[in-house]
Image 1 (cartoon, rainbow, N blue to C red):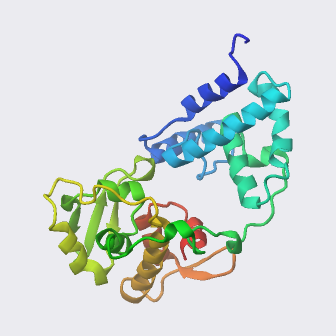
Image 2: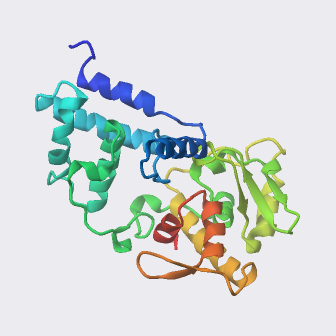
Image 3: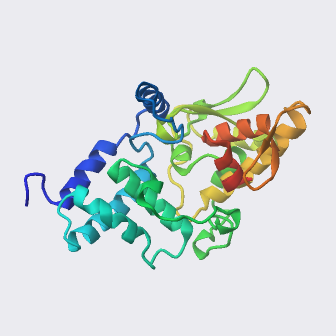
Length: 289
């Protein structure tokens, strides 16, 4: 083993540097923006140096270690020597989906501190038709709605993430000055705080669930792994968008045109995107609407 350790060890060290869970992603973006201004580089607001999501961190780390093992078997002893092997790795036949190839390229881009396009791999155009998550029935999604009635109703009412709903307490649910029922998220994805609109048709139900626990105790002690949380987030997003357009947004709202040609109210879309905890409107459009 060289002075820098094995390539596996170097990969481990690199991901320890990338670990930014619990730290503000927004602040990291502002630091990156200032750096780009000073160096004259083009700033990409969607990119930050570290990884702020625990699920993304675990997924990317797993991909990086598989690649490191592949590079080691092909004679690479350092990450520098492994870099030229990235293209062959990303073009292997095992990656049948363009989405899988993009995901692995994103993981390697974090590993090497570059962009996905630097590897010279050709990606196909992105299409909503290729998104299958929570849009086709899966055997493991079959859960009893009766036994899980409270948590499923709460998911439909708020569109919260799995981690967030495990942490929600009765004191986080309140009526705003504008008359809307809201849920406060203290630490969402990337450690960010946000306020979530509760769908009006669920006000009574959510308040009923709220009353079942002491104010400062988590409402839900556990959530079944088989519950398809993302499908309820998508259902919530569509219902909230309709409600915003019909009840909250001026008819002269500016138009947002998505990459696939669909048109949305930018103001309503921004409300939905913020409620879901996403910054980019296109992500909200592509994966939820």
